Amino acid sequence: MEKKDSIIKYYQKQSRFYDITRPIFLFGRSEIVRWISESNVKGELLEIGCGTGHILKSLSRNTDCEMTGIDLSPDMLEIAKRKLPPEINLHQTDLADFNSKEKYDAVLLSYVFTLDFLQIEAHIKKVKQLLKPNGKIYVLDFHRYGSDLYKRYMNWHGIEMGEELLSSLESEFKTEQLSIKKAYFGVWEYFIYQGTNVRD
Image 1 (cartoon, one colour):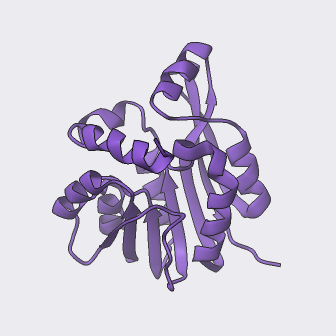
Image 2 (cartoon, rainbow, N blue to C red):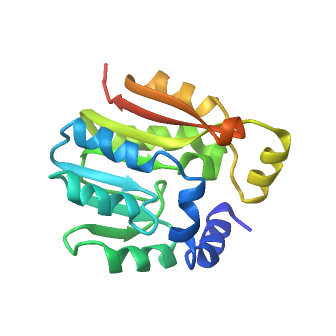
């Protein structure tokens, strides 16, 4: 089964209880909303992997951006459509296949890169193409395993993590803010990142 198909199948089931279960391990979502709000981002904002619209809903209350969300899962997007204001544009696609003529002032990815860890370099390149010069990238994602047991558990759920993701972001963007935090006393680490698309 291809990676895209496996993700769609996984979230077909997970969408039923996603909003109930994710707060216990997808940490940092309210903080990244605060970062974006405090950065006073204006213009067009794109969330890649918007899921059920949790972050977009918060951003709609805390920013003046025009927002677009994309997600591969039709089941997750159906939930997002029910909870989000109609002016937020939603599209069923993934990052690789998202061919937008629009260039964005900000791009947000929350727990997206680690769903397909082998493609992080290609995905970062695509994000750079979608961003305006000096546009902002915001990333919230897993950073490092705290134990082999947790690694096996996350791999079973299709998640891979490693410090290479943050290193790649820091090499491709100008870092403006970075916070690395421990979850459950070090069972794993996650990070929050803000960078600028500075082009040579």
